[in-house]
Length: 182
Figure 1 (cartoon, one colour):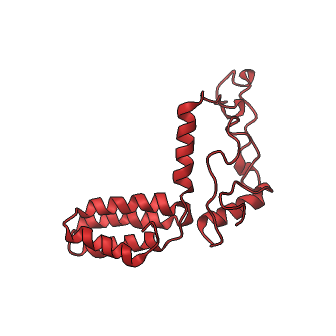
Figure 2: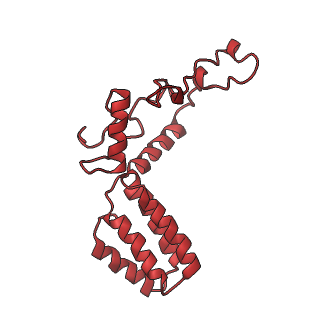
Figure 3: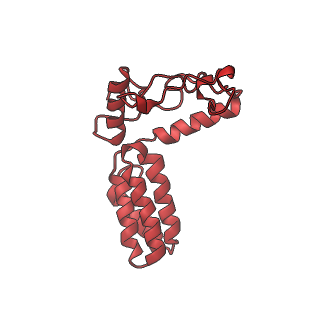
């Protein structure tokens, strides 16, 4: 699946099925690949994989083999992005090795008497802006691209469309992983 080879995907799936592997285990592995390897390139791959797990729990073999093939082939044939996997790994490593950042004053709870005196004011609600975005600092000690780096390539994936959208809304390009091009 990771290498986008549909024949190899079906071969190894058939080996697992023929060897008597629990279809729930196979479906769980497909779910992991859908998020780790496909990720933001095609959000529907995870939906397909989750649906496959639910379906094989209800149906079982022999028909479950078709459901597993459907989900495995979706993951194999989908464009790939591991920006979510890489990003959370970088963020977890940072959190484990650095002192916690203070929550910016404008993000602290301001729904109580005395909040303004503590400086808990200034949050700009993104939905009040026609773009659905307001320029604010949400994590002051985290520079842009420290964790999330787009894997969007030249294909019209969800991640590519989201990158293009946010570039337009913010007026500046987001972090890129592959040569700065999209």
